[in-house]
Length: 147
Image (cartoon, rainbow, N blue to C red; front, side, top):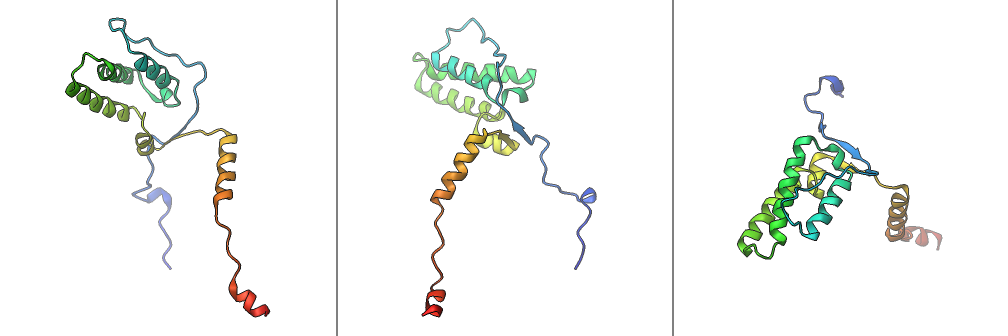
């Protein structure tokens, strides 16, 4: 049997530099949206949720500009004066920007960002899985051997 290489000389370690366990933000510092737009309520709600999310501490100052652009695109999606074709285009572009900032489940997965879960949530999940797991049936050979 051949011994494996020491981990220090392995070429591929399957590690991502962005891997992190993200924790909830308490009392987040939510930047203001620019004043020149009468923001739709859905955009304002998204903005608050976005900056209150566990992903917010991972963003740099330059990411703030990307999020401003995403808010502007979302505003166009919700604005009734925007043509249907422009709404679709804006929604598509906003979706791409959200992914770039780690605001979708698949983006978090590719960045290897895991959101810390509360102990009660983990406990409930464990209980639910145990309750739904099928119990193994008795081995029919044992019943035959006993009889």
